[in-house]
Image (tube, rainbow, N blue to C red):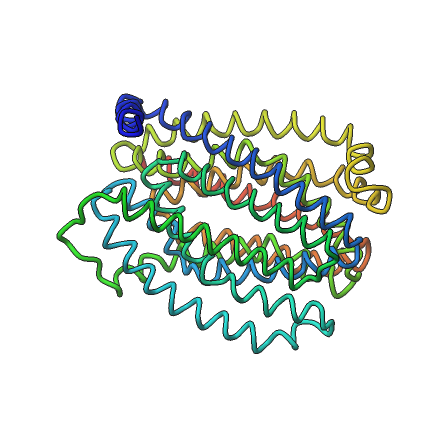
Length: 424
């Protein structure tokens, strides 16, 4: 029965055209993102209500550091893997085996540094213990990112769905148990590390079973790292851009303000679930089309921008309308200030989503260096704006800084894409 179902799945996948594959992959990723967001939201409710805004802010601060380190350790290899494997699937094994060796060394260095530097990152002993426990998750996080990038390159979004929902479900049960038993931040981060380790094991087993026979041509390490460098810079700049707000709010306004801002981010991120599912399938599709016809890739971008703009406006208006009861009846009255931030943040999704689509188009056309220039400009704008605006308005000031930076960044992307299209 299992072989019969697998044969049907392979046959269906081969019959799908380019547009249908994009829609099919987006639909699976949407289910994955919706399910993952639902479980993630329940996790936030459990931790936010169970710990209170101050300790929840500590937890958010730890996870912000962990995610920043996670992206830094990727050194751009994951995006390169997705793009290249989508074009030549038979290079999967040489790519993955080399990447895992690289990630092992980098993750070990970063985890060791996190253990040593924990006392310098916070004066709170609870936060320090949480950071030390989070170091255990660095290696499995890196391995997971490699396998997820591989599965996306294969356009096997069904595997991404299973791994994501399975891991989050286990973590939800673990977090709930920790809160019920009165556990600490360190216990919560231990649950996170165990969940990531189990996902890495499952992903490795799937890779060993499904990877095609290896290409005889090997992967040269020096060449790989050189080509990955633009992706590494883009990923690092993008991650710092999404975390710079918390790194300012936590020391300036305190842990409680960071917790309030994090609640706002949960709803803000939920609005991006449908487009994020679309983006997961958009990059390999644009890469395939750009390799054969830039005109087709440009037409795909135009349709994508119209779709994303319409969604962003509708979602922003609806979320702003229900923001107050939404926060009150989920996280409780102690987080009600988050609704004020949310009413501003929802409109940031319009330039932010358009910027993301434009960056994927430039990636597909191998214009990563200019993406890095734009991302660096965005980060500099955020750093210049967020500090003074957080001092002036707290978390609301951080939201205003994000809105200004993303709007200016959209103008930079529009100018570059106009130039690229003009060369067609």
